[in-house]
Amino acid sequence: MSKSLAKTNEYNQKNLLKKIFSSDSPELYVKQLPAQALYLTIKQNGLADCFELIELCTVEQCQLFLDLDCWNTDSFNEENFWHWLELPDSGGDTPDLDILEKILKASDLKIVAYLLGRYVNFQVYEETTDEPPAGDYFTPDLGRTWVNVHIRDPHRNFLLNRFLAMIFDLDPRIFYQLISVPTIATLSQLQEDSFQDKQKRLESEGFPSWERAMELNTPLKFDNKQSQDSSKKFRQNFNPQNLPTPAFEPTDLQPLSQLWGLKGDPTELDGELTMLINSAMVRWRLPLDNFEQINFCAEQVTGAINIGLEVVVNHFHNDLLQIYETYFLQKLYRIGLGELHHLQRLAKKIDKEKLKAINKSDPVLFYQIAGILENFPQFAISNNSDDLELVTEYQAFRYLSEINPLLHKVKDLTE
Image 1 (cartoon, rainbow, N blue to C red):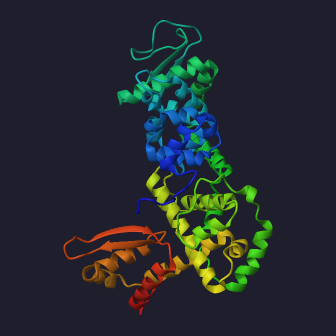
Image 2: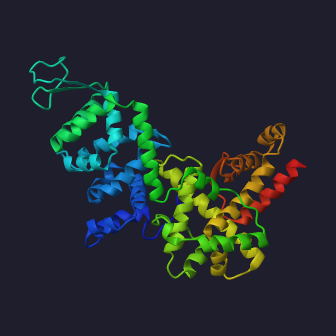
Image 3: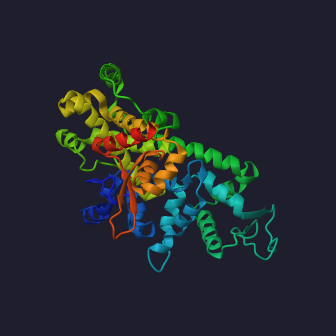
């Protein structure tokens, strides 16, 4: 993977923290930023190191952070949630329980109930009592409710105890509601219902449904007349207001970067690019808590759009803005995917025995083919000088000039 993938200007993750805390009003500045851009900044810099940033974020922004960070597709990522419960200890010698309260408000209470159902025993009595059911129970309400957190890890045991105590102090009604939920819903039901709610929230933030993501990531073979005819209908139905708040901007790839420069206000382009990157993450089921994979995906999508734009420019030699108004990024992306898919389809025809022989005779070519055969084709760069061991890195395909030589090599191997 290459180091820099989705370079941004306003939302550059490396510089965003500096911009926030050097602004006249950091809190106001943060509120105006896209939650997804803030999330990427947190993932790159580390959760604990972004304590002060999260203090400035709204509950709604934090809710998206949890939706992105604490799920592996349809399964709750409990490991990451524990890191969020540790956050109050990152701000100094004294725990900051205000940020823990913000995490509670940003959390889906069904997931909190899910954790309680897994790790907490409750005994509720009609009358208060001084006698606990066992020695490791405690009572938050003078003996009516007795609580036992049973996690083997003592640190996590402490975190959940502290979380429960804060919930009770904040609002006892919420506490009593939470402890009753596991008695009327199974853990799997709680997780499934929370997942469905999370999906709805992500769709409202610009992460398309699975069906829409599949549509947006379907390769398209370039056809001059058909493309223009279908684009007319698409243009009539295109509504920029449905695009997500931009969280990504393109790299300096040409001619794509030139298109951004020609567009007076690139907000629409940025929003469409963000939608396509999000759709690719949904389509390929990428872990949304992995910054490197997110950034690599951003580079792959941007590269495919640039390739699609090159294809159309080679046919029409038109003004780039006119091409955009005809195809939009969505169709350019699919045309770029079509070029990559064609290369991949040919590579899949190579005989397995021939691939084994290539691995021995020409390891550079073998790694190139291996990259092509990835779900989203990748471009292999190898260093095999005489005094160095072969080192291969994979980056996104960005130009037709990277595809065409490999196309000839792969064709030769299939004949």
